[in-house]
Length: 334
Image (cartoon, rainbow, N blue to C red; front, side, top):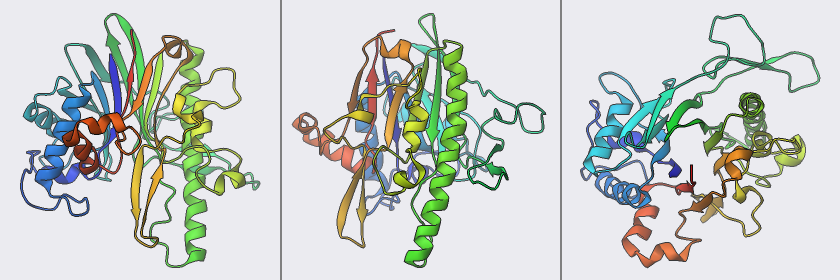
């Protein structure tokens, strides 16, 4: 089967208040790309992926009379996708949900959050992802209260008699948005990095619970981080992705791109101040050791790094028009 993760930039802007697709000449939210262009590009990309399940990052939100899951299902119906049933976990107020779009003929899936629910007493290090995590990142012995603006989506899936756990993730961005000076940018960047690392520690706690119970696990999504991305890694010792992976532990998650030597990238952003593109490795599909032993095959659908994708010029352009991130897929025999 094929499992994918895909951060779709400004997906929320492509639906009206009732969840119907806005296929018109209005601007999409992406620079110089109309809603009709982005919708057509996304349809082409999703059809070409032909995945059994896609963890959609920045999926349309739920609000008013609109249901984000139904909006995704409307999109899937529009383009005749096999992955046509949608699942959203804890809704958030960022207009960027985490959703699983899957083929109901291949698998069943339900939201299955673990941890201590809000208001319940219990272990302080295992709250539910819509709750608060207490951790001391300083030397002052005062715990900090960490939350997710986009709580990870925990899924229990059954595929051909096999049980599987998936966790969809959209971690805190490190970008110093709103900075008014270089000094301010440094302060915000460090603050954001600290919160991201705390989120990753929280996530790793949950991962270790699954690994200790020998449950097949896939952790996937946009981590807004990767090994060696910036100077703050020296300050904090490890990147968020290395924490989630379990660097140095006996039970590590595996994604070949984390240690790849050829510098793969899953996203690109235009830097107006530098008048150039920034490419980064931010999106991962990490699997537990038992799944890694099944020899899955990963692919980053980046036409800038994978010339084979440009053998189909329409697909090549669609991948560039659809989002500032590229899909990542994993084919695995279950």
